Amino acid sequence: GASFSLSQSDIAVAGASAALLRTKGEVEVRASGPQAVNQAVKAIAIARGYIAPDNLDLVVKPAFVKLELENEERTALKFSIKAHPLET
Image 1: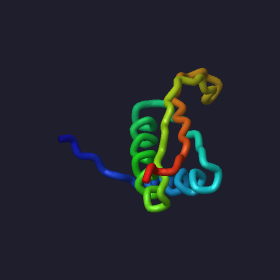
Image 2 (image 1 turned 90 degrees about the vertical axis):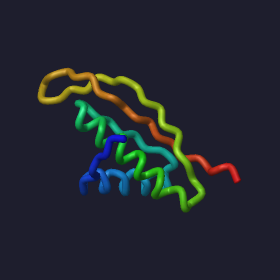
Image 3 (image 1 turned 180 degrees about the vertical axis):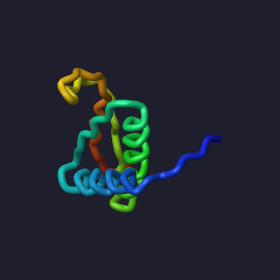
Image 4 (image 1 turned 120 degrees about the vertical axis):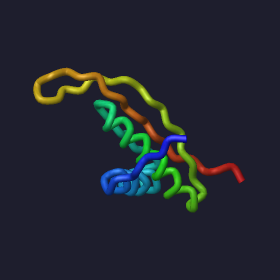
């Protein structure tokens, strides 16, 4: 299988996402470009591990959105993430 490395920013995004999921129950992550999408997906996977000890799991709904970056319209991915209690 393929291997990948985690950067400090992956871990930081995951930690921030996990904190919001615990307090608000949902978070939205937007990513434009292949590297950013890869980073977002890794952060979501890490965040899932962070909230598991709290008996929570994630539902992730990806969608395409338009973003305006530097006066240019770009297509990006939006990940709407919600926490829900694990079935016990």
